[in-house]
Amino acid sequence: MNTLNRNYINGRWVAWDGDMIDVHEAATGEVIARVPAAGAAEMDQAVAAAHAAFDDWSQSPVARRLAVLEQLHSGLLARAGEIAQTVCREVGMPIRLATAIQAGLPATVTRTYLDLLPSFPFRETVGNSEVQYLPVGVVGCITPWNYPLHQAVLKVVPALAAGCTVVLKPSEVAPQSAYILAEILDSTGLPPGVFNLVCGPGATAGEALIHHPDVRMLSFTGSTDTGRRVAHAAADDCKRLALELGGKSASLVLPDADLAAAVKGTVNSCLLNSGQTCTALTRLLVPADRHDEACELAAAAVARMTPGNPLDEATRLGPLASAQQHRRVLDYIRLGLTEGATLVTGGPDAPEGCARGYFVKATVFGHVRPDSRIAQEEIFGPVLCVIPYRDEAEAIGIANGTRYGLSGAVWSADPERARQVAGRLRSGQVTVNGGAFNPRAPFGGFGHSGLGREFGRWGLEEFLEVRSLQL
Ligand code: NAD
View (cartoon, rainbow, N blue to C red):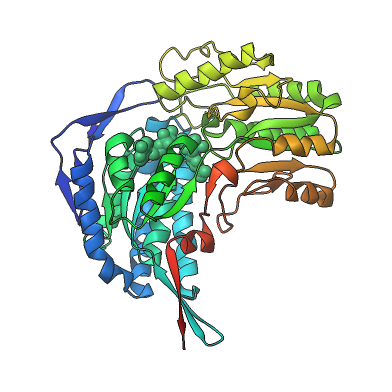
């Protein structure tokens, strides 16, 4: 049992003897850790510390920030194995994926800011003006459970690089890697108060953070419903706001595409982290005359992904992260059965050999109506909707026909045609024929998928105010 009865406030670990929150192992349902159910009092202390530290840190030379980030980078690499195991057990993320995305990607993101910072133009001349980029102030960072360390690092690192001070409230479902992050930052000699960690429920700790008058910016990743609450709180106090929210992304297969490659790429994206990925391609749009072939290919791809123990190197499909997620995804699968879609593979029964934990069968629905709920709402589980279309215009309409706009994919034998269609999708990122993820490119959503951008220069600029001096 990992008893984390402490919060990190003002450069030291503050003991907690109040209520604790249980953290469950996704593959077994057993309690593996406990963390504080902290609330407004701890948030007040953390924000006060961040507020007091801001003046000094905001004026720190870039070299000082680089020294901290360099040590963070080394610390993340040194503790990679422990981080991967931790996230694998609490989220159910297969260990190979946890190693790449929870241990590897946070180090890569930190490296991108180490590379970017020395040449970032914090001052530039525009005619008779000097344009200055200044840190926003105290930033409240709130993160979800699906890629917990990555999402925390994607906020904390550019915020610190910009000269902001931070209060991090991680998801109470998967909080342990945030403690590892705090331990590493503590060892870097970061001045007290520059980074603070408070763990508690959204309804108490989260609400206290978003409404705190000394917090000048909220950077939130999570569901669209919570994002809206955060946006209301930001509006009430004119706080800066960055939101990374949900998605219902389309994979649009043009008639000339290599269908097998397109279906394989789409299934891999849809089932990544058991479908608990905001960018997951969950709607496969295929020409009507290739619908049945696409369903067969999808069923074959899914059959190769039997659910298993996430700690096993060979496992590619783990359980869902929590009992709540498990209920929610099974409800959507049952809903699909009543909405007139055809069940191609999967369904609501427990997968064989998975009596414990939060496992579900990877599920493919065919003949899904674009306006049905399973095609419109974010399920956040391993559920693929195959949707037939008649022509390109209809396909683009279906792809753009949800309230979301996070991600998308286009497949065609003609790269120029694919590019043109990709340009008509209303989403923050689109892959063409399976183009690789680029951690230096901007990432974010249109519509109900969010506001602002993360990664690279764009991620840094979110944390900067711009001032012009007329000379
Ligand atoms: P969630 O909205 O339930 O919780 C996210 C965070 O908000 C948690 O830390 C939670 O404690 C906190 N929170 C909850 N209520 C709050 C309140 N009233 N005030 C302040 N904070 C509050 O989301 P989740 O279930 O943890 O994560 C899954 C969601 O995150 C999915 O919708 C997914 O698409 C989205 N997501 C988006 C991205 C992206 O980059 N766009 C990335 C990952 C996940």
